[in-house]
Each structure stands twice: as structure tokens, then as C-alpha cells.
Image (cartoon, rainbow, N blue to C red; front, top):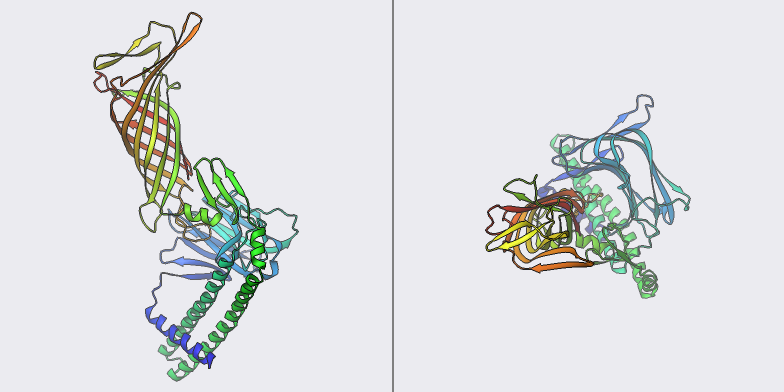
Length: 531
């Protein structure tokens, strides 16, 4: 009775799904390789025959658009049962043509869809440009918790890639892993995550079999429409298909329920808690840019950005939020544009400099697209000018003149400190997915371009003069407004890759309020945005 109810229900579900189906894409297959084909394809994926070896297949993947943000991939997924606790090597031959952003082999070891246990996509050794056939390898350790291994070939953005002779083999454990996410990193999977993963797998099994039944029902209905079989025969076939799918669901669900029961028993016996306590991980202190993968149990404290991450999932989640924060540091050359001309400056080109330190917020403008971002925050800007020809500034009423000093100066420097609120429209080409096709709105992971401006107030103006008075070294520091503009505003832009950018700023307001000659600060340097 239970089986009859089960296959009757999934048959009804399949019939309803047929009426309400809305296709946004489908899985395609090239022999036993699969890929996802959207409604507007970016790639043509197929296979070619080797003219010298007629029994050998050469697979190819070629972009069909001039501009593509993202990647295409052909892949396989196999059970991990034969490889658990062993080191596995994936190898194959690849050649490429005009693969500007690169192609690569990739392999991933999973615990259901809940956690990636090991991964390598040759991110640090991509196959770029036009290359001839060459053998490439990936080596990963497969933890005993693994449930599947996926592997394939990817093409990032545009170009064409060919591959052949892809093999998976067990190798000696002494062979080092190639991935940045290594299987030997003791990635403990919590009890809660395991239980949820098994529950999700049970639901996935049911959904997958119902979808398969729907496709079979569709095929039978098409045969009826073509007059190939009668309606009575069709109904009998549908019931038979439903029985098969119901039996498959019952068998697979029973297997997962057995795993779930064992998991619960291990928790009751205290085995799982002990394992958790034995694998607490460690805390990593980072200065600057860190690798995304820090391990499931490890913690990371990034001194530069003053952020603490409790494991890889916490880091991935926080870095992929719609609004993220960054610590900004910039430094470089500073000078002035005098009446539109910067060629004949009164200030040293390499002696005058600027610094900027601030905090910004980066908000993705579109919910499902990662290209456009609004970037805003607060910064302290330090602009320094060093006059040439032994000169310094002298206040003369409402004018501030740059005059020759009567003393023999060792250094003359004019510094202004501003508190500004920058605002930029940022174009971030990091993409909407990770290398496995999972939606991931990561920022600062590729080329970036920002255009905008800033506005703020002058906090302090100061002139520093150093000279010798007989045997004494004298430093004079004079603070005042020097007739400088109280309110600052200007335009700025930056362009770069990941966290590093070339940065250009130009003050629209003159440096001094009432001077006869307008002088506007201009700055050029490097900018670092630490996530």
C-alpha cells in the first residue's frame, strides 16, 4: 500500500509540474559530460574526432559572444566511495586559442552540497592565450566524509579550449596537493550541517525522480499525440514508470535515512562531540591580502582591515554580502594645477606627496548583478606641498604669497589635512558566480573601475620650515588658516585589479580663497582597498 501511494503521488506531481513548468535553461550533454545551457548561450560545447585516432574524442568549448562575464564548464560527477581516504590525481591534455582570461582543469571534493572538502581550479596557473597540447595535473586528498567528486574543464570569458584523455587515478599519499583548499586540512563537518545535508539530499532525491518521471510522461504524451500508441497503453506505461521511480525513491531514501540514524546514534554516544573538540582549528593572523580559503575550523584575524572571520563559511558569507566594508589606504604624488597648467609648478614633483586613510562601504546596486556598486565613506586626506627655490608661504592680508625666504632652508613644507566623504560609482568585474557556478557576489576579486568625487572640510593647515641657525638645527611649525579654502570638493577616479588601483584626484576648489592666481591640488598615486 505504501508503494502504491508513493508512485500515485509522484505521478500526480509530475502531471501538475508539466502544466506549470517554466524553463529557464536545461542541462545539456556531450557524450557523458554535462554542462548547463542557459537561454542565451555563451559557449558552444561539443566534441571532435581525432583524424589520426578515430576512436579518440576531443572535446571543445568555444565562446559565441565577443564579451562574456563568467565562464563555461564541461564536467562529470562520480561517487567518492572508491577514493575515500586516498590521494587522487586528475590529469588531461589541454590546448587553447585566444583564451585571454584563461582555461583550466578543475576538481572538487564535496560532502553533498553542504561543504567543499577539497578544491583546485588552477587559479594560480591558468592556461592563457594560444597554446599547443600540454598535459596538466591536479592532485587532491579525498577525506573519508566525501560523498562525491566533480571534475572538468573551464573556459573563463572568451576564447576556445580543447581537451582529451581526462583520467582520475589513485596516487601515493606522498604526492603534494595542488589546491588552495586541501583535503588534508581537517575540515570538520558539524553535526547540524551533516543532518541538514542528509535531509536536503533526501528532498533532492525525491525532486530529481519526480522531474525524471515528468520527462518520461511528456515523452509518452508526445507518442500519443503522434498516434504511435493508444491512450490506454499510455496510461499503463505511465503507471509502470511511476512504479520504477517510486522504487528508486524508496531505495535511495532508505540509504540516506540509515546514514541519518547512524549520525544521531553517534551524537548520542558522544563520539561526534569528541571529534569536534579534537578539531578546533587555529587562529591565523594576516597583514594585507589573504587567501579566501582558511579552512572550516580555522579563524582569521586580518590586521589590515581589522576583521575577524570564524572559519571559511563565515568569511565567504560576509565577503559576499550586498554591502561590505573596506579599509582604504592611498599614497602618491601631490602638486597643483596653476591656471590650468601643471608643467611649470612652484612645487617639487617628487617631494610633494599625499596620503589618504579611510573606511568605505561598498553596496551592490542591483540585487542579482555584481557589476555596479555604490562606494561611500569617510577619509582623512593629507596633502603636502614642498616649494622650490628656497621659498615659503607668507600671509599678506587676504593674499597668501609664495616668497623667497631670507634663511637658507633645509626643508619647506606646507600641509593641509581634510576630512572628506568620497562617493564613487564602481564597476566591479568579479562576476556573479564562483568557479563552480555557485552564485557568489564577491567584490575586489577582478578588474575594478571607479568614478566619482569627494567633498569635505579643512581640518588643519600648517607650514613646517627647517633651517640651521649657526650650530643649531631649527624647526618652525606655524599653524593657521593661511587663507586656505575651508570647504573642499573635487573629482576622483581609480582603476586597478583586486585590491590595488591607480588613483587620481583633482580639487575643483582653489587651494587659497582669494589669491589672484588659482591653484588646485591634483594627486596621483596607488590606492589599496582591504576587504
